[in-house]
Image 1: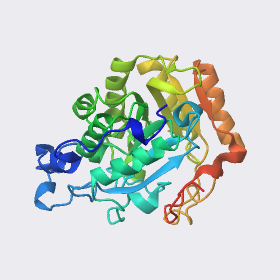
Image 2: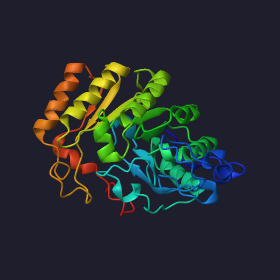
Image 3: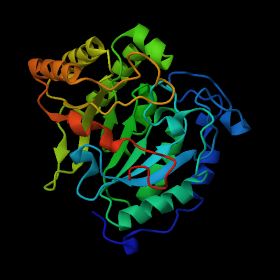
Length: 323
C-alpha cells in the first residue's frame, strides 16, 4: 500500500484530459455493444447520455465491497455518471440515468481526488460502470499509474461490454469485477432494454477469463491483486434466472471461478409499486439460489448475508454515498 503524497508524481505532460480530448474512440462511439456511433467529441450524447469529458459522479472511499476488493484500507471508487444499460431497478439510479449530473468533468481533477484517498490509506482503486466510458477509464488509469499509484486497479462493470474494449485495458487493470445479470433474453429486454445481454455478457466474461483464469491472487492481508470475481444480484421473483446464470458461469467458465452472490436488492422509486420488483428478496428465494451454487460446486467467493443486505446501498445525494 502506498504511504504518502511524497510517493506520487506530478501530473504527466499534457495530462489525462488532453489525451482524452484527442481520443478517436469518442467520435462515432462504439465503445459498448450499443454501438450508437454518437460523435461525443462534437458534443453529441451517446445512448448512455454521456459526452466526451470525465463524466464522474462521485469519488469516494468504500469499505462495503467484497473483502478482497475493499482490502484493509477500503477502495477508492470512481463512479462514472450514466450507463449503457439503465436497468429499471438500478441501485445506483441517482447517477446512472441519462440526465444525471457529473461532479467532475476533468480526469486530472479526479486523479487528484483518488491520489488523496490513496495517501489516506485506500488499498485499491475501482472504476465503476466501465462500458460506456472505456476511453475515460483508459486515460484515468494511465494517469494514475504515471503518477505513482501502485495499488490494484479494479474494473467494476455490468459486463455489457465489447471484448475488444476490454482487451485495450488489459495492461492497466488487475482485478475484474463484472456482473452477470441475466441468462434470459426476455428478462434482459424487459428490465434493461438489452435483449442480447446474455450472449454479449458471456462473451465478455469469456474474454476476461481467458486472461485471468479461475485464480484470484491475494496478498497476505487478503487484498485481491489480480483475477476475476463474477457478481450476481438476486432479483425478487427471478430465482430461475439466478439459477440459470450460475449454471452458465460454472459451465462456460469454471466451477472454480470466484463468485459473489448478492442479496442487497431494494426497490427504487421507479419500481416501488410493482408486485415483484417492489419488494425485497425473500429468505426462501435466496436460500434456493445459494443451494444451487452449492450443487454446482461454486465454492470460491462470497455470499452476502440477507439480514444485512441493505446496509451498503448508496445515497449519491451525500458527499459520502456509503455513510
